[in-house]
Length: 137
Image 1 (cartoon, rainbow, N blue to C red):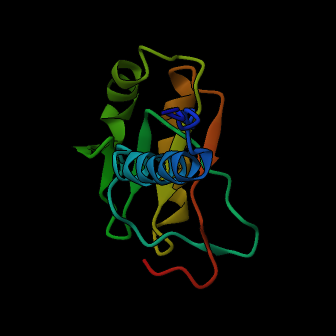
Image 2: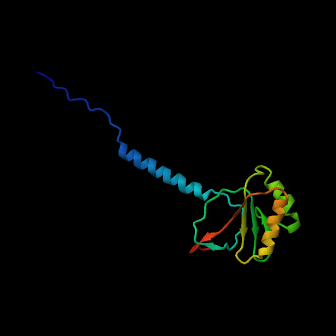
Image 3: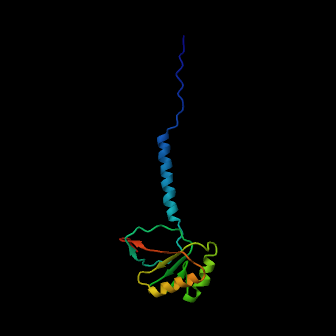
């Protein structure tokens, strides 16, 4: 009696399900990393613009509210104390840009005086925050 052996099946790695899993993980980590961004600013009603804003990762944020309150990285400051507070906040990156979040209804002169105080301590780069048309506050 002759016994026939079955051909041995080679193991295969299915690539399509693996690509699906990798894509799912990629999307999951992208979405979760967006939720982990640290925002150092106070909520203000930013002016609207038609140009799409460039996303910047700023470490130091100067916020001016419509009622005249001034904040550096969510800490309230007075106009004459902006310089020392900014110098301490920008110690790690003195050549970096200062992000200015000025409320749409804020006093223009107050915003300029706050930026002038920053210039006195050596800040040379400013980034002004805006929102695209149609964005909610």
